[in-house]
Length: 276
Figure 1 (cartoon, one colour):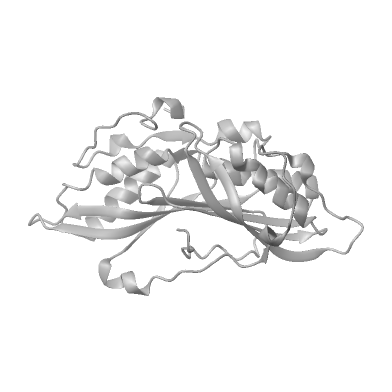
Figure 2 (cartoon, one colour):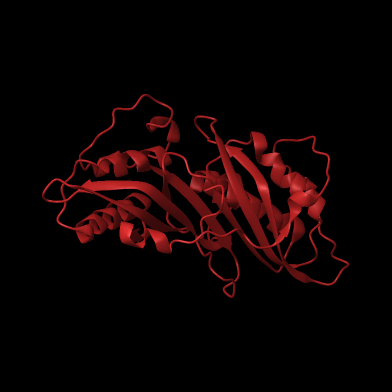
């Protein structure tokens, strides 16, 4: 199953409280990649970082246990998992008795890896380590400081410009104004985004206009980030490029895609920002 309209998303739901891996609903990445002209060898590598804050199960004596789970889904996996099905799957552990956290991790790794078609790294933060978790904002020059006029709320790659007569620069540009909508339900998704590139200077005002242009656009998080990556790569032609978005959580789950085309780039830190 790969058509999101066939999933539980946007439909009345009966919540299952005992372990059920069949709840996971995979969606093929390639359909949307075809739409943005990505076929064959991927022009990027990366990861989708999922943080689940509402993970609970029972120990063998029936006492509830809780944790925060982090999933690292490789960008070259053939599928993503539709987010509502992911939440329903996690909720299916609520009344499930497990021997220990290793048993939970084994289920999570096996089930999510099978759903996306690639090995998924999974880690748990238990309550005694909650206090060690840190927050942080994306670093870079804030585009939102610019006083611009906006007339379009659909992504328009023609807006993107770079000065190829100027010397190449390396910089990180950040905006908190990225908003897109769920592909199926139209519910708003809010994010902060960081563009790290080396190449001809990108015109910042036009980049901000382009990012704001996602405001009425319907696409899943991972698809939006790949669209941004490909549009900047084609229109501005940087030598190196990385795009990272931190989306606010819904239903106790946040999704944070990162796409990059240079191996010297620093992988994202997974620091939760203020809006998350």
